[in-house]
Image 1 (cartoon, rainbow, N blue to C red):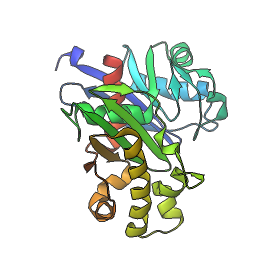
Image 2 (cartoon, rainbow, N blue to C red):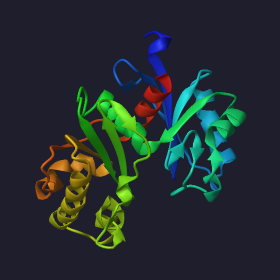
Image 3 (tube, rainbow, N blue to C red):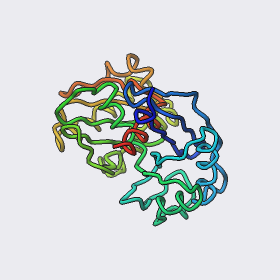
Image 4 (spheres, one colour):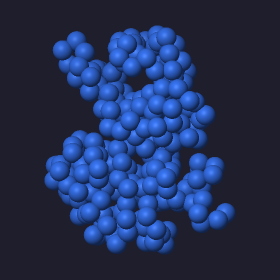
Length: 247
């Protein structure tokens, strides 16, 4: 496999930072991924040091892609949900390049996963409006229209029934309240029907760990839009980051 068809993606999360080279023709990892626990406190410099360790492990000298659990606007991290608050307003591109000596494209984690699903996964070849929705601690979203990403949509934070609705419909809410699949499905129906009325997507792809149990809860979700499980699962962020950096 020629080097020009290989990228490298790193997925920064609140508990772990993982990365691997990616075969960009197949949309698959080209080597076993390396995971290192996220340093505490997870300051920009400390996280960048771990990113550098992953790059060194794979002897990677070229530009690479990096996901981050926040709004990322032109390389600046504007929010910080599960990482140190010093990330708010940080120039992530500058910090990572300064610490690692290599250039990174930093993107929102849901956006990276969404692009991977559109390019290689459940929405491959789809030319319409695709919403990729990740159900986990919160609700992440990626909106892709005609193959082009609309970055930082943050659709998990829509206000419904007087609350930020991810507090009721995320997978963490299901676990916290010990909801049955049916009761959780009713909340997801409320959420997705609201999003449908705002955006009229052609396809909704659901990611996050619970997508592995799609057949157990999806019968209780009613949408007019086709609803399908994500295919790339835990590797989507790494693959999408490598793809976006390569492009």
